Image 1 (spheres, rainbow, N blue to C red):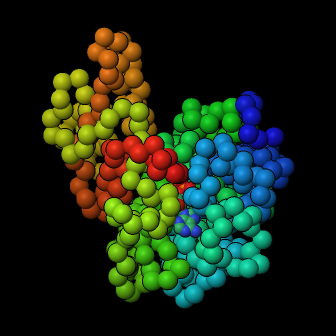
Image 2: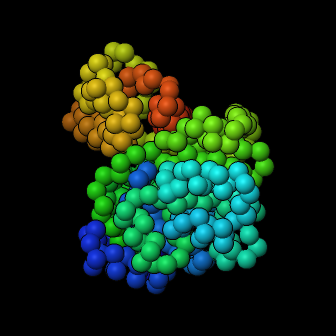
Length: 339
Ligand code: TXA
Ligand code: MG
């Protein structure tokens, strides 16, 4: 029931919708659902056919492993080996926007493709009411990468999911806008504690909880990325993106922050959490305007670009800047689009 074009059901966030969503997962189908970070594209993490369908729907490279979503720490401990550090972080931040990469248990029962054949697995207990209700109704582990075609901007609304994957997945459970708006913080504990992806829970908060600093992130030019999805070009709009812009070039769509106005503004009051929640929706809107402008001026030959104001590099601003740098990076057709 996956892989080919078919109508995608839009399910309401009510009892009927939840029952239908859980039934689709139980039948090996694909359901997108809201989490506090972004919408995920869910499938039964124990079924190789269902997990293969996620990779196919997203055109995701098979080397890039998926995050497994579970209801609670007890369910997570049946999948991965937890040490004291892992339990401490789980107790402090779950349910919530933190993913832990841990050694995979031999008896985890997951489809090997979920972790791309690695000895580790990424786990997360989401906090969003709809995600939690779906996990309870389904009653098993749900593999879910962000619900976007590989390499594109993550979805924070049901409409975004349908724009990217409509006709390629069975259903989307509509739970409105995602409150955090950026993908989860990823910390690897498969070895020294290491930040693999910045998010709403900051490296400082993790280090404070662990009582020790995190190891430096690898993945610099020339080294293999530790989280295979953390490649240079990612989260990419179609239009070219320019960062740290105080005044845009003529014709650019300008995304402002705080007092730097812009055609669109991430947070007029300069609130970084609000900016994170709005980031992906506004990048999509700017991309749409750029495409429209390009279509109305075909003689110009190229589409208009997007410029964005500087975002303070503190707190969740570090995660915003991480995503913006990837969105602005040159697009390598081989490495682009891994998540
Ligand atoms: O907030 C989120 O984390 C969302 C929601 C839906 O939960 N999910 C998400 O999944 O962002 P995805 O697939 O777009 O990003 C998962 C990242 C990828 O960069 C992947 O390479 C990394 O997690 N990852 C997964 N398993 C891993 C593992 N065993 N070792 C290292 N990195 C891993
Ligand atoms: Mg992704």
